[in-house]
Length: 95
Image (cartoon, rainbow, N blue to C red; front, side, top):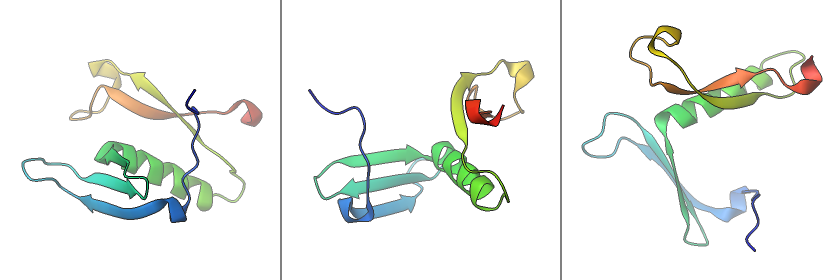
């Protein structure tokens, strides 16, 4: 059975490419592993990860962040935003 959890370290990564593929409007991050596997992250995913990272690193007390995927109705989301969003959810330990 294959593990459901995998930790990627710098030495697992052969290369990271960040750019807008031909014919697309949004950035993609491609993480190429030494194993030959590739992980491709869409721009929104990278943006959410960066937003959460900066929020933790720059906050005087915050030690973690949990983003949960949710489908939003047209009235609940900003114009031009996708319906599926990763939104910050308060963790159990912060209650």
